[in-house]
Image (tube, rainbow, N blue to C red; front, side, top):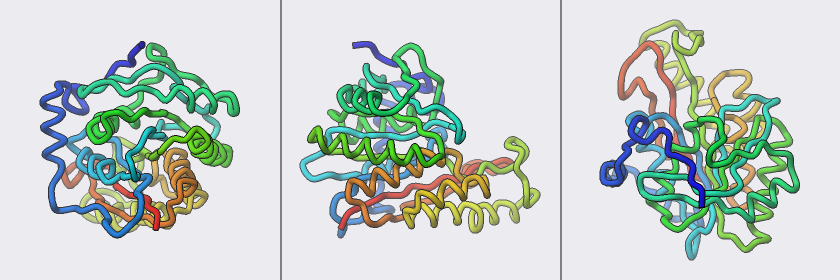
Length: 286
């Protein structure tokens, strides 16, 4: 079976299996516990910077995902897309990680492409994208036998129908499914051309307590339409299509509540005039 390369291994995250595994295990600690009074935790929102900045957040969210009797398939929504972008999917093959390959759920992905228009990526022809790749070692570590469906959906109403249908198809096929949406939050500073509050501590506090908080609150409220609107208005969700799709998909899996697990910024790791916000959220059932 053909394999897509792990392009960012060795730069955004460790490239060797032993280093990758050791880093993941270091991310786990007792400071942040998964909700233990919920039913299944079927989905989440994860950040997608290099692991030094946001890996711990993404790792913890993915570790919290739990479905009775295990999960067969992970539908992961990502990609930096605009409202008029094409839908993107990888519908066959494997994707390499330092911990081993993850196989695409061919049947589920193929059925989606028969019902909706997609730009289909292959193992050798694809747009380089960090939003999904940096999550894959975490998925492989926590769910060694799981299959994946990597999807990019733009922030528009049609994407919400695709996300809902993806879960409907997974149910029809008897899959036990979990879903992820990959996004970072406010990109602030000279590097990103966005500085409504100038520089310094005032700007950092505004991003944390105002701009990012608005986005996080809407994700926790599981309001997919407001998430898209907020991203256009406040520039605080870099992959709103992925977030909205994950919310819709989680609801279709029975999720009725959400919890913010952890929030931070790259400024907390490496103070700079340009910085990015990150959040980890889980979606669960009663």
